[in-house]
Length: 114
Length: 115
Image 1: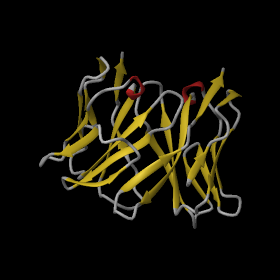
Image 2: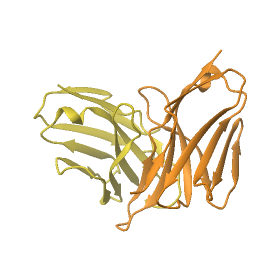
Image 3: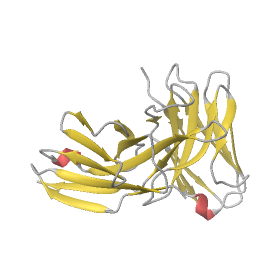
Image 4: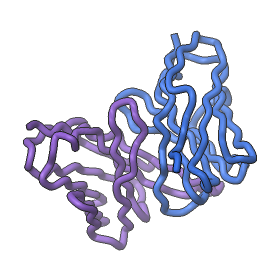
């Protein structure tokens, strides 16, 4: 079985531009979460989607948005990119939307804003 | 605010010794804690989950303890090997009032096992 897949793996964007990151969860997993990890820090929660609905949002500005599709894949969109948005963006899938369950992470998308 | 703290940013240890990593939490009592391994440029990989009513959990050379009095979890790797070199993340999982499930991570401890 394929794990969580993310695309692209690396991306370089200019300040002010828009970016779309994509994630395909493990087959059968209905929940997708997005995390931002800056160098030297642990991942920080951005969004959770479950059954195509937003379940929660972390402390991120409205420039960040996401959606989940009928096949449970997900997109993370970031508008008006800032230098500080440079980070590793991680997608995690879980089998259910709640509960004490392990999260399966993709390899991440390394976003560099110049 | 609810925090997960991993006080050691880096830990160097000789091959064959036991590595012990610390995770402390403040301002709340998590029902469970999770430990992940992260290699450079890769996503975290789940290792172990321990619930508050479990004192200890083991998996091969890995052992996790949970002390609710000290508000601390310890993560041990016995007979450490150079291949164990990585960053280890402690995380608390919680369901928010809105129903979202999210992990709150510590900064991680970078373990280097020296041959």
